[in-house]
Image 1 (cartoon, rainbow, N blue to C red):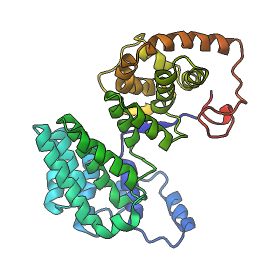
Image 2: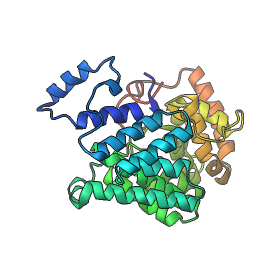
Image 3: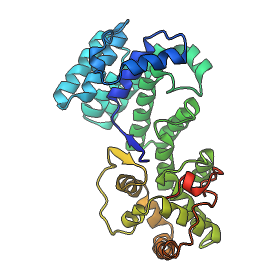
Image 4: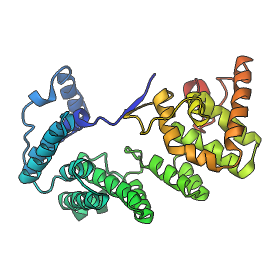
Length: 326
């Protein structure tokens, strides 16, 4: 099965927002209602203008996310703020598209954070820490936090950026936004290997390239060409053999991370290379080691010595063929 992580968010956010306005008595009732929506356009459901000005403003932002022209997106964001100054996502959109400097973007993200705090209230933070993002109304606030953290890195204040990212993981340990991947890369930029190991251990069953290729790199940095580091690297190559092409320069990396990430695919390999190639270059001998082990892996695979019934190296306890293996 192909799994795709996409940056596109408007349709899903519209659906979650629409469902949040319903008063279902049970999960079964909600599932029955979802079945009635199959094949329908969410814009035609009615009631989307919301029970509050904030709901109406938020749906304007959903429209803006689907709008092709920047000028129209900005107009919708400004209109949303006229309707409700508590629309965090309107500030987020303006920060991304209209800010003339990182400082101006930071101010707009801060407005979004402040708006989110007003909407959620202190009680939500006390009682629902650890469950953010699962609650739809927290998402605009979490997006504001992510933008604020990223901008702190851009203006040369990484300590503030790190603090916000870790705050986000405390609010939402499930990390639907992929903040851990940003953190891992940022720690890598500073060669903070202990912090990277701690973060990897925090999510031991993650099977994305960000994790599975960085684990053997850190093992190699600490232990050299050990049995463990080789097994970890072979597992990573098995997960996505395309990563090595970009790390070793056989394929050119794009300037930016692709909008859509397909696990095990070329887009995932590109995204990993953009974030982590500099780290592989900084670990002495790592790329040469990768090239040599890649050839050994190919020989072993050709000889049929990779057993898909072996326990998966991600630590899940499942067999490779039922987990991350090919």
